[in-house]
Length: 137
Image (cartoon, rainbow, N blue to C red; front, side, top):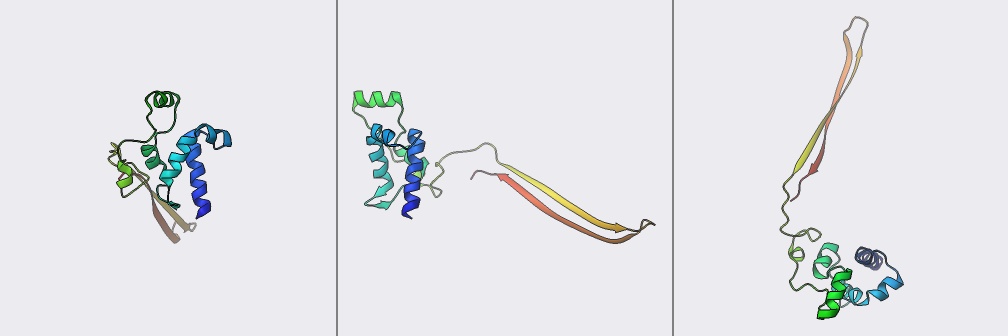
């Protein structure tokens, strides 16, 4: 479990900073502490989903860092993200999709033995349905 948590933290740093190295961690130390504060609560994993973390702590960019230094703001969001209250934590709440697609492939295979006169000696038919869906709930 500890290895999984460390791996997810490294993945989060890569998503936020582009890489996970000592120099990027030093350059973004405040955001690293904010992420660790949200991910771990008294040493226990709390929020590990990237979508929820990005709603809570905005990823750094040049313009935001200048604005934060001038205004004294932080990268923390002022409102609680709706994804944290969702039944599916990795999906943001309230997102509506216009297209829901379902594709069915009906595959049939016929194996037959036919004699010289054209009469069927034995025949077997097998079939199955393959489904591919793009349904967004």
